Image 1 (spheres, rainbow, N blue to C red):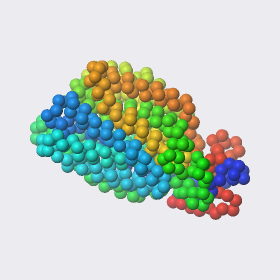
Image 2 (image 1 turned 90 degrees about the horizontal axis):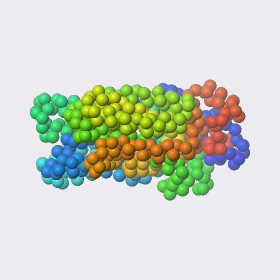
Image 3 (image 1 turned 135 degrees about the horizontal axis):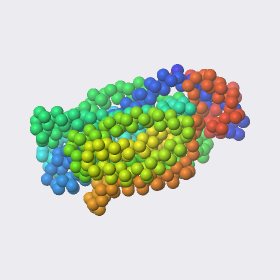
Image 4 (image 1 turned 180 degrees about the vertical axis):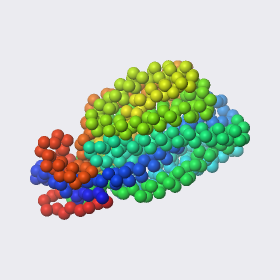
Length: 505
């Protein structure tokens, strides 16, 4: 059961020095947290399953959709399909983010999941260039754009959802499970591609994947999408959102209040500083993350010289081990703070990236595994706290919209384009270390942004009352509020005197 109080929009002195009371505190039982987060994780699994199969099939899809072009040019054309889905993401964020602040997180998350599943399945039905010529790339790009639009609301909404549903003391731990789903989904995509390649080639010969085998991983999205949509229908709305909505309806906030719900222009006006911090940290996270996942199969096959099956499967154990570590890192961030964990990610990126690519280029399987583990270390520290640290930069009333803008601008410009830019830089310079330099540059920018990022661990989200797991914890929190450095009632939608309290579930 989720217990919350209907809040007013008064803050600080305007609320008459109002103190936090037990019934102001949101109590979310652990089983409800598990239900809500599992329903969100399954959607992220589906999103990254698609990214996985597209990344691992990039070389194969070059032969399918760009037959007749030079192989290097064709590969860039296919990788541009990956990049174009990210270039559309800001549009999806601009539309779906504010919509999620207006109609609710759960409704938008259901919509994004349905769009993603349908578009992924349709890719598996597309005609090849052998059938319709150069036009084959056009419907592929269009469906990647649909995916990009839906994903513009997916991750921003999912991180907003899990951060709002998580108790303050353990938000890092619970939110980290979202990216466990992401990377397990990517590993599942890689495994499906590797298994499909092995089976179809043993049955139909070496050209089987180009002839028909590439379609199978995309069509698997049909049953997976159905399961994901079912889970999305079962998740409840977040109590923090419902409380903020109740406050908006009861008491009209001043239009100049930064804690009020704002549209796109208002979000940029009041939250441009945290948006810039978010963009820098997301760029640092995703250049490393997409290099490890989406670009690595292409790099291993084209530059290092591994065969397609080895290139697809070698990252799977690394991703699974890294995924298993994410909740541990999330728990660490609950204890020492988000900023120190981000600092570990930045420093390890600068220290490990060049040696990792040097070891990788030895070409032996053991060396590739060691190198991938080295790349995975900073990625793990980055992504483990993304879902807890980034949404905490913004107030509840505008969190979905602001998060969508910051995240999608960074991912579209810098993260999703990592495979395209990395391959283009290698082809332009002949330097096989260019992906490492690219990743390190954005780590430096992230480190600079980290200097101005406020700490959010152990604290209620801005614009929300505290969230705890038990009534006893709520009573202890209220009793010790005068000595608690993590509480700031000025940003909380507290009840006015004599207001009624209710339950939300």
